[in-house]
Length: 306
Image 1 (cartoon, rainbow, N blue to C red):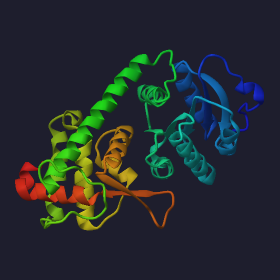
Image 2 (image 1 turned 30 degrees about the vertical axis):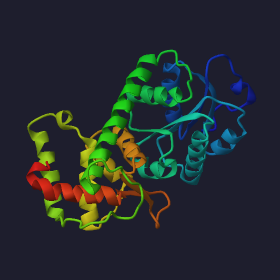
Image 3 (image 1 turned 45 degrees about the horizontal axis):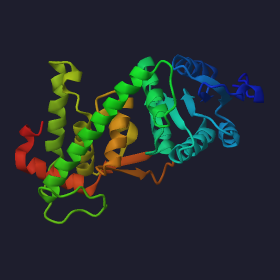
Image 4 (image 1 turned 135 degrees about the horizontal axis):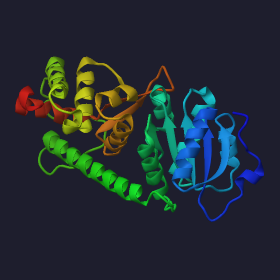
């Protein structure tokens, strides 16, 4: 990683939007460079993960930051991601973090529910889309990603609308028609219908069997799959890390993470830090969500719940 150019001349700016790159290896840096150049952005600086947090803190200005991770850089990686999450929340710059599936849990724990665009094992189209979405938040002009920006803005709008619809439906199930979704962690009043973990497992199993007869994408419903997985875990008193929940969503990890972030934002899911591992977070149902799902199963029965 010492081969990266980090002198002052590397940070001169032109009219093109400059972007800083941080990577965990030489190969990771090459992948980051390819994605940024394809988006029409100028590279303002390259740096290894070690020391990147200090370098960014000293940077006068930048439009965006791309972090490429293909191996675990330990404490330096964690500190960088925490700082970047804070800077993005403050509106200092936009950021994309691209990581391998093996790093999903520690990266998700550090990034949290911030505005950082997190992509996992992403292909070229997904990488371009993440960069377009991230920079669009700061109105950074891209030369070749206008279509990607429009398409992803529409997809994110649809995702937000779908999660809002789910939240409204669960609110009606939990507290009656017209009731708003509450975000408190106190369980709602009223009796919670009993529900067996075997019933939920049978529904999940039946949903998976559909893939034997039709393509998976015909039945993709990551929100419902995540809801069922968390409900099953709650009944069995198991804890679900982010990586496991993404697998349960039965869609690419990057797509699952976007759903997860929106479900947390809407108050349907809660994030809990692992008290024994600072590099992992668990996800669980909000009390109101749990109550609504249990009422749903009680009302329609396990077969209709598929």
